[in-house]
Image (cartoon, rainbow, N blue to C red; front, side, top):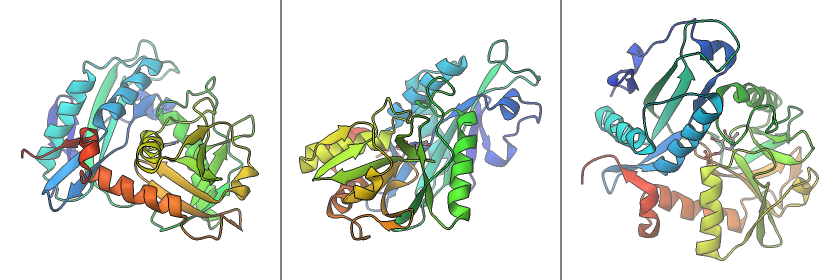
Length: 305
Ligand SMILES: Cc1ncc(COP(=O)(O)O)c(C=O)c1O
């Protein structure tokens, strides 16, 4: 089954969607992207695109930061994605990658007076952090602050730092990095938000702690409150607190809810998947596959019913 891209206003095979080596974004990191999952439900014979609108709203917020003008509304972007997913016709989990970028074939560090373009493509995609329990390390690479590269949106250039952190972690035998912000507080993983369980409550860095306000983070907070009656405290988290947590997990569109078993060679709790983490995982997986009727408005079906 081939992958397709929506590129220059038409759907074409992904292999044919090409840009010039002179493209401005390739040189200066001036692009904004999203990562959206479509989750295959074999019983329903359906793929559910998860929280499509929220992802595209965040993309358009990023476009505003980078002065990228797209001729599309959130609804247009959602419609184009459904159309593209139908064309791909996969019957498995998929990943949607929209990218809005500075497209002028010209050199010069700026975001003004450069043209913009947009591409979205879909590929089949399974697990990201391919482990039941992740072993993490605190990275020496810091997250940029709001006054360097705004972390609230997925700006391409931002991810060079995250890639440094991730590679250091993996090459040192860990599964994922935990990045701190410049003021020394815990921020996030290279592609995930982080939660601790302390005294029966969830604790997670606040949105002012230089994090991406993750959509999975938002789902987790809501599911914990509505389904388990568990409160989330959003506040600065000290590095050492990572060692005091009863449970720890990471959240992200790619990583789903991944338990963290070890941080810098210290077990989290007893090193096993904690009870609250396990419950949240079960809830989350049912919700993203369209198996929980209460949360069906988070799921956009790809195929006609
Ligand atoms: C740096 C970073 N933090 C957190 C997240 C989680 O965000 P979301 O749940 O919206 O995928 C991501 C993934 O996109 C990310 O790249």
